[in-house]
Length: 387
Image 1 (cartoon, rainbow, N blue to C red):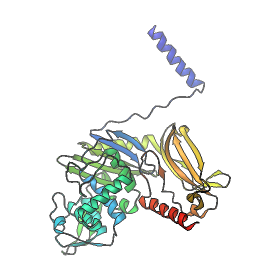
Image 2: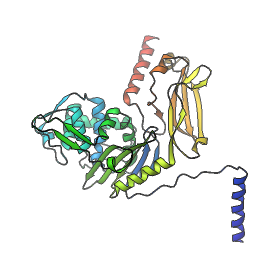
Image 3: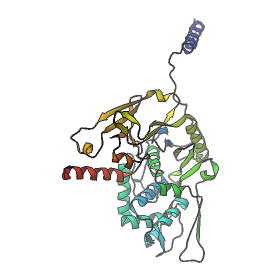
């Protein structure tokens, strides 16, 4: 009887396929890792493709410096000369061997921070940009809040162990996806060797990148290693293939180089960055999409995409500023992002940048906080100027 039932089921499945019946596609089978926690993200769309204990709070060692770098780039002036304080000069752990009172540009210090993981560089950067290490840490936590890193808290700019200094694989993936869309950050972390003038010696600093993935994986282009005796081996790496960039985070992973290669291969094989909206695309008569939108999709998922256009209230400040509405995109009923909608020929359309996607479900937001503040300023001006 069991054999007969199995045969009937097999025949039904074969017949259904033969008559064109809809087939349910399974989610791509996920590879295992040696990591305690891991996450894989598509950088452009902010979609988390893989998570293994992704929301577990853990120590992150020098992966902290990803946050340090992006805050310094956004809040500091790269040409500023930074003076090395006694606190920075004496900082324990990995170092680029800065001398007390030495001056170096913020831009060059960022290379020492990200290529050689200098704790002295991290401290000098923090004191200069934040006014003090404590002031800079405040900026780090504010950035984490802005990016929706709900399970993260920073206590220092370098990642030396502290009980209240932690993050998660998912949060660090979101941070990395955000940071990699900054061209200065991207240029720094993909650099294999950097030569920097040494004002106190006759020879230059020459810093080689500790991230071995740059030489071990085709298309690798970042981002940061990390280690302490308590945190163990931590690694964030990124790679780009066929215009798609992925980033992977592993925490406490004794086999991280191999795990990163395998997970990146898996991500590129199963998820393709797919255009869903084109900038200037006509949505309704007289209305067009403000920018393009792309999303990483597995095979068969495109059929689950839906688009909903919501018009802006004609009496609102945003409408008076030229925003006609919002196009919301969903995947199987779950919001994945939105695109502003403008009247055809609107001057606002020319100002939009395709890289500034608005993502749903807590994904990394491209473009940074400045875009939000700029929009707020425009709304305030409209409300009080009566335009």
